[in-house]
Image 1 (tube, rainbow, N blue to C red):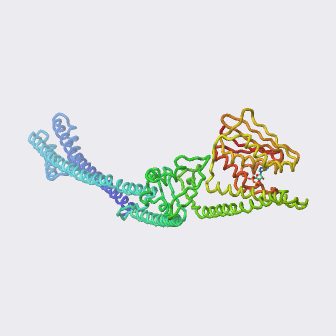
Image 2: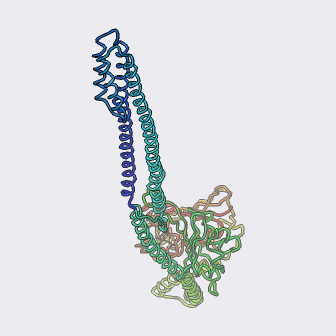
Image 3: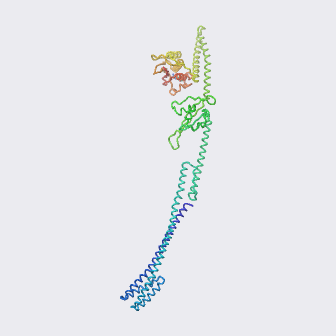
Length: 574
Ligand code: ADP
């Protein structure tokens, strides 16, 4: 039943009952009033007249007016006959009064009148008693009927009071609960409320809405799951190992490649803290080194060597922080990291092939160059025969070119040593002066050609340095050769050797063209040459120098003012 109908019926019945109650009460009150009025009018007046007639009768002997008083009350009584037998009694009074009027001294008549009046009073008193009994029963009936109707009213009101509020409030409560569930994205929530009232309609509409929301959310979820699967497949099919961790370093995903190289199974990886996985796996420990203690300044650049796919493979590690800005927020939140290992084995293999090729070629070049130089020496030997001036010029040209060729093959051989990690050091107390003299000697003729002077300044008392004298001399030679090449004619080149703390510092300062600031950080890179540099060269000299110095535990640096000159400095242990 509709709430509105229920309310209408409830309130309507209550209203009707109250109406009936009021009508009944009115009717009974009216009835009681009628009864009392009847007693008053019909019987009380008769008693009053009878009493007055008796009083007048007492006066009759002494007061002649008493007759008229008696007659007046008799006439009033004659008009007020209401009870059965009252008429006869009144008539008797009238008859005997008429007789008394004729014979006033007749005491017998007076006595008869008194008896008649007593009879009249008796009739009326009996009537009063009877009527009082009737009024009493009317009052009793009124009490019973009114209280019964009142009781029914009370019961109906009570039923309404108990049922109506819960009838309205209960569905609202259960709907409110369900709305809260929906608000918390629990779209499976339904309201089970069997009713034909308005709440039934509301429940139906709510359930339809919840079903549609569920369908929508599931379709969205389905989309998200499919997207996730797609990305997982993509990651799984990547040829590079990938590991994803959350902000607490718990492994979220790991692809097949990563499983292959670590030799772990997915269930031993996913869902575990990565540091716990690392405890039993050296490779994982190596991979997460930068995750646990991030080295922001010097992130590891060296490729990782891992035995994978049945051979030694090289991987470059990259750790990407995942930061997201949640909807409606301004600040980004860190939610995890992705560790990617890029397989650079093919490049490494190519690099190795190149190094081997360079090594072989430069090694093979050395023998013919040596024979050329030996041939030149023989040609220059006067005992064998004189050369004319043109031939001498030709021989000089050949010597210069063969020297250059020797330098280049030497550099190429050195770089193959460096690249294959096979720098062999012979560290010993080496004579500083010898090193400096060797480098100067090697560059003397080219310096003389440009009228460049070397100014050597070795701090007093300094004689030895702990170094591989050959490699150190090679580095100093390379720095001097660069200084000569990049200096203007008629300039000076300073060679300073001094002791700073427990280190011996060599520096070569020229006043040549200098190096533009944007190239300063690159000149120690392999094969790097400042763009537009017209002087011949391989771009290898400084990178080999750096490797040689660092291999000896030293450091090489450069300071340069573009257009004013450069200072190259390296230091070694004293
Ligand atoms: P290269 O064989 O080209 O000289 P290096 O590795 O020795 O190779 O030097 C790399 C680059 O650094 C050179 O190409 C040159 O441009 C620059 N450079 C090196 N030394 C000097 C210097 N003393 N003055 C100016 N530029 C220099």
